[in-house]
Image (tube, rainbow, N blue to C red; front, side, top):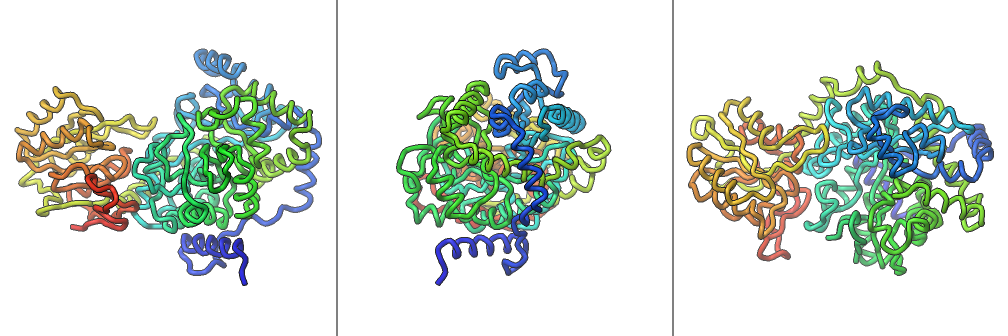
Length: 606
């Protein structure tokens, strides 16, 4: 008789095998083989040389402002001094001995590929100059879709839910592999992706299209494929947000969400993608700042919960790799304890890396004190450090920590990669409704188009605005398209202007963004429909908008407003490509939320 853990591991291996296009678990990329004893001995000697301050520092992954490691802009120096007490990345490493640095666009770390590569090299040079030289694990959130810290000219791919709509594990794997190759060329060694959450709550404010979908097994296949893609390119992947952030209507950035799944529901809904990631050899797992009473009734968020991190993730699921927290600056982890206790409690729970604390001095001092006082045992901290150093060893940081402009030129944003992104995007656009065969639009009957609607701010460097991108692409496809941005909350004046503009055109394409019952976007669509002109609605984020737009005859979902997905949607609207995407989540009726309007797998063809 198989044990519960054996059954879980076998199921996870099968999911990972399916993601790799095989029917057997034998083809699953297994976790890295045990390192040679000589490697273990070398890394243990490195740890033995560290002071408590150096050991504590290696546990932190920290933000830092600036485009360069040693000579940032004066405004970035001022921001660093105010928030961290250092001038730049080099001083951050020298002062706190941090083991990782996370890149953000708003911190001015990701202007362009050459600058990112130079920043990465500068960070590694500063790390090599330490008393105990340890390379830094440089990381970022490059999920693609709506979360992309690095923009063009790097290649940008459809996000997770769009990939889920394609249903192609090969496309998910290829996107991860190419993205990983480009990150590596820029010196970024860890990507906080893929998102392994199963988005079963349409009202989820923080996950949504960052998830591959609402079917746990389908999500598991896509997660395993992306793990293999990223890590085959030499970049550490990170499955997040354990134990699963997909069924909440609270954003852990601003509050403490509760997941009310029973233990059996958690096993059925939330666990499969993480099991598949572990079976595929995932390098790291990120914890969530969520409370799951069925897994730990204490009320502690998962990040601080030993029953969840050690009991479930480590022991029950058998995960032996690096565990990293979600950002410790998020409100969800700060609600119950002070900033001095949070890092210590996270380490005691079983976490290895502490991501982006709000005050590094407070957090670092607290960990050093806990280590000196014995609250954190030195053998346990050394075990965490060994896991981190083994990850760095596995990803080549000790042997080859630097990159070059030549590597950037050979890999980042090259034509073949951009063509792959466009091809993958063509499999994602989903046609939800097409009453009377309105789509594809005819250049003869509807050649003069108004492209109107929401223009949410695009991730840095990912293009936009959506109405402009759609209008430009449709014009290139033979239409005469004019863009009019009305935003996500259009005023009465803008709505009236849009209606007047449509009166002298043949049809409208309206981009919608998370429409609600009281949304002015809904009024905009109603006013456009009142003109009697054909109206095509494109949901540029969550695909649920159509449930509130009864009069619309033609409705599509692109799952994001980044250029690669919008260009693909335009080609579908123009009839240059068939819509082949299928809903990876159900769309429920607005007047009866328990009733399915369009099920998982729904998608029309021409």
